[in-house]
Image (tube, rainbow, N blue to C red; front, side, top):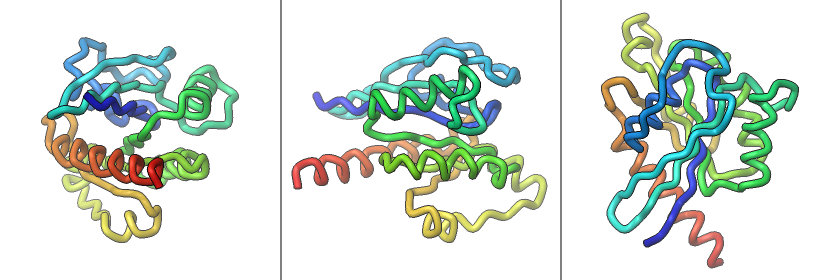
Amino acid sequence: MREITVAIAGNPNVGKSTIFNALTGANQHVGNWPGKTVEKKTGQFRHGNIKFNMVDLPGTYSLSAFSPEEVVAREYIIQEKPNIVVIVADATNLERNLYLTVQILEMAVPAMLVLNMMDAAQGRSIQIDVAALQEKLGIPVVTAVARTTNGLHDMISTMLKLSQMGMQHAAG
């Protein structure tokens, strides 16, 4: 069985823990307190013959390494070198979320962006050109409503594709 390590990163209160819980079944409290996950949380799930080892990083607005949350998130990505970093962003406040996204992309790690809370964005008449965003960032972008698990299948499919691309680069 092949194992893939996935770090879930993002600003506080964007739905990281909700996605983590939906995928892993881990019983972790999901609340609205910034910095509530000071330590990384881990869990696993299987998809076919692949075991995904998931790490829920603390919510942080940047990787500048000033706060304990920033230090934990930054050090995990640099030192543990996860196979994929899933960046979760609040679709209702995309601009604020892109700062962390760009910092993670500058680390040259395999990544994807999950635009969460798409139902709330649509409710506020916020339109996001996902294809254009994907092209500008140079990474896959999927949409989701984590609390209803909408979009999680696309997220898993994209993680599988990213892991296969990583295996090809490692072999080449």
